[in-house]
Amino acid sequence: MIFSTYKFILGFLPIVFAAYWILTKAKFFTLAKLVLVVASLYFYMQGSAEFFPYFCISIFGNYVVGNSLCALKGDDKKIAIQKKVILLLGILGNIALLGYYKYDNFILRNINSIFGTDFQMRNTPLPIGISFFTFQLIAFLADSYKDTSKEYTILNYLLFITFFPQLIVGPIVHHSEIVPQFESEEKKKFNAENIKCGIILFVAGCAKKLILADPLTQSAQTFFDALTSEYVPGFLESWFYSIEYTISYYFDLSGYADMAIGLGLMFNIILPENFNSPYKARNFQDYWRRWHITLSRFLGDYVFKSVFRKESKIRNYYVATLITFLVSGFWHGAGWRFVLWGILNGIFVCAASFMKRKNLSLPAPLAYTLTALGVVALRALFVLNSLRSGFSIFIGMTNLKNFFSQNFFQQIMEFGNKKLLFAAILICWLAPTSKLVTEKIKTKKISAVAAGTLFAVCILLMNNTVSDFLYFQF
Image (cartoon, rainbow, N blue to C red; front, side):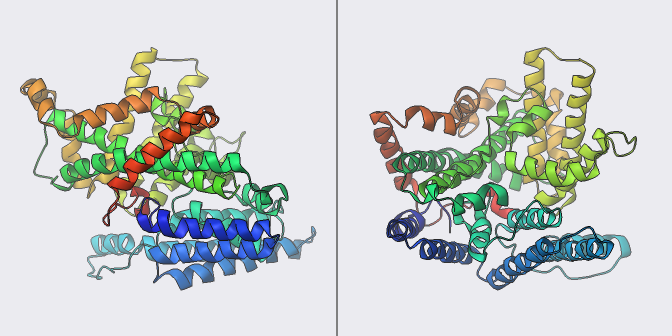
């Protein structure tokens, strides 16, 4: 079920919202939580019905493993070994489930290529959100092992994993920031201000998706789908459509994040911020502090810190960073282009860190320009069908001879969506974040008028073929 559809906005959300707050107001707190869990499970089942039984087995199985780890106390060597074995089995179980559904064909293709075998590709649909909730479950197990979590009630645990606003595409939440909110007496109080902010954020995210992301994505996707290893596009079209896809990608994912955070506020739950104007970054280190913040936080806490050793020559900052981004690339998709994307991002982050440590810096205009071009070029890897076809887009990007032989202004005028793309770029560069806008206008009467107008436009743009969010494929 997609947030930006009639079914969700006019059906699912009003029913769940009303039921939750009526029961909470009547002090049936446990029943209110149960309604939210059941609604969230129904929400997930609408998108991945075939996988739903395995989803339930996974979350209940991880609950048993996590509580088993929490129950093992003491410094006894036998207990330490037991905890390590249980943790290892729990993590391997999560990775095996993820691998079976996400990486099966990738593994089979590479086996066929290396050994000359002829294994048939499987046609298994990727369960939505599997990469996201797998990370949350692994974090829960790791913290249970380190005794930094506690034995939660089954209802609060289920809300941590299944809470529908963040279940599919994040933000990737940590149990320590979500479960205490569902346990808090203060959060059981109806908060009109939070609900108002939530509605404004939801509408803003919906507008990002429907007005900006969808038309830009459709245009760019058409171009990239037509790419082959034999066809080398021109310099201008290579950069135009790559920029278009990069901008649409941001508005698609940040639009979902805004809607998710807004929905959380409607239930008086604060979800973590996921974007902080990433295209204003001066370098790649800055970019990854602003882009998909909760993913960076998870990778930093559970991958980087596991590898990095301050006094080690081998497990130093640069090695730990490269391994972290290698994991990030592989997490994003089952293909060598995603691995390459991760490695290149890691190299650029290491370069930015090296320059900072050596007190080196580029002039601001050059630094911002190079970072933006790097982000665009690497983002193109996401939409390509293969690395082989990818070479043609990168050849086109660097074909200056082709650039000088083209009529610059004539070709620019032939591109579709150029006005929309220009407006979207201005929003990326000049506009404050959705969170800041919401905080600034929530007390003003005009906010209701603006939100209502924007919502009306979104409703008119909705139809039965609303595009999936781009991160559904991960």
